[in-house]
Image 1 (cartoon, rainbow, N blue to C red):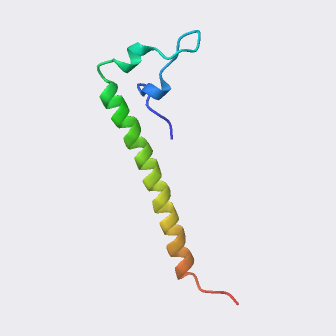
Image 2 (image 1 turned 45 degrees about the vertical axis):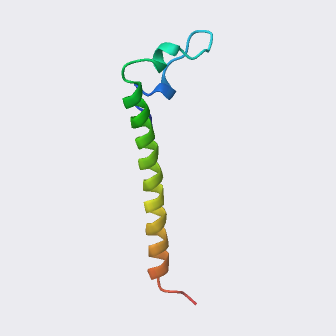
Image 3 (image 1 turned 90 degrees about the horizontal axis):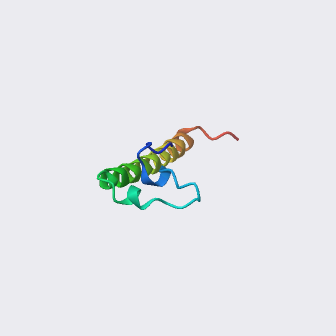
Length: 65
């Protein structure tokens, strides 16, 4: 999963490698933070759903002897 460009964790750093405080106090910081969190939650739930489908398919498959 790729973070949105406006995501704080993906924000560019200064040429010396430091995090820019301007990114933390931007007007959209809350939306960026919530969007990144929801993206991670959606990815987690998708993996969980894939696992549940795998388990259900495995349980319904006829056992071979």
